[in-house]
Image 1 (cartoon, rainbow, N blue to C red):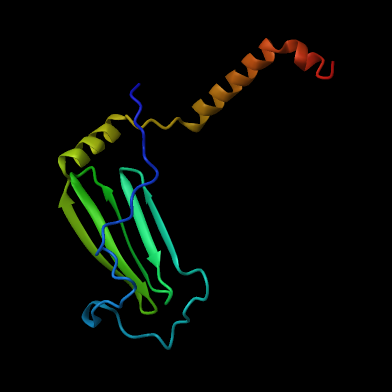
Image 2 (cartoon, rainbow, N blue to C red):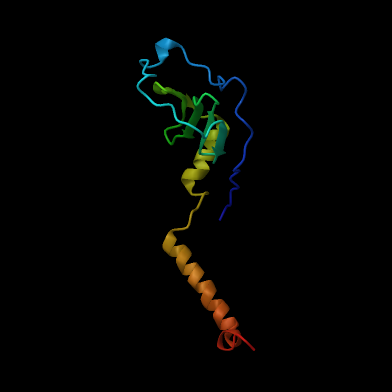
Length: 149
């Protein structure tokens, strides 16, 4: 079995990918509903990011409660699907893109589809756990029979 290490931490997104909470152009935004929608209190600012090599997501919540972020995944169709978004009191404003995979991304996707990333089925994991317990019990029978010597 080939094992592949999946990094769970990665550097911040490149500069310029986050407009620091500034509103997007009015023609790209929805109708102005600021008076009708309550602005959430608390929880901001924060920064969130994860990357599994197949998909990723980052989000930045600014002090004014506006959120910017991006998420995407490597598609089995040979494309990288990305969604950049801006969310404020007027709603969620996504911008979608679809670009061909780079050679490295295509290799990662091929490893994934060939099964290099193997996740055990719950019943297999349960059987292995039960087997480990039974083996330990048989190897330590005297401790089980007399736990307080």
